[in-house]
Image (cartoon, rainbow, N blue to C red; front, side, top):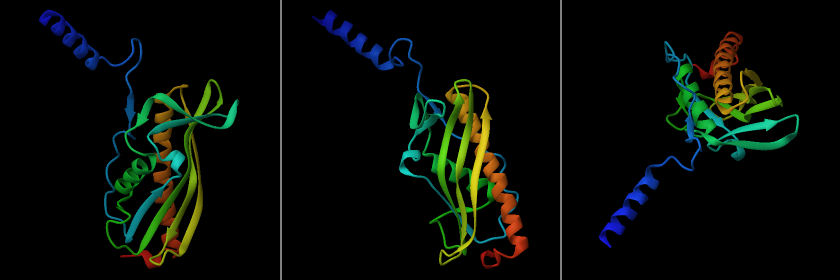
Length: 199
């Protein structure tokens, strides 16, 4: 009886340490990769940032669409996940690289609000896809009145038709968003629209 119990215990432990069903790949967890260097100097503005996304894009699933088949259907890769919600990952990256603070962590004169409408790998055909980041950016003053607004529409080609290529393209789209916001801030400062946001 003891011999049988010991054999059963060994089988149970082997099951615990297995990666899953035979031939099934381990779950891949992705973030946006190593960040570029933090902003060289703090922003000249008293500014917080807030990134929001609708519930269906604010989960851990890595989403894709097949425009050539069912464009309205949002799908998820079965064996790949984000390390955090896309909104939180994007906010963390922008906070660091633009030298801002996260909304709610202190009083600031203005708020940069990013509303994400789409953050997914979009397939135009079975072999052609791109990482798509769309939405809207707004600069809001202390009373949350709008100072400036612009649409975000970024698409980065993905080299292959898989989750790894999709993540790489989406990560690059966040990098492009960072550059766009930095350039836009400079334009608005020169134009005087952000005068109330200065420290």
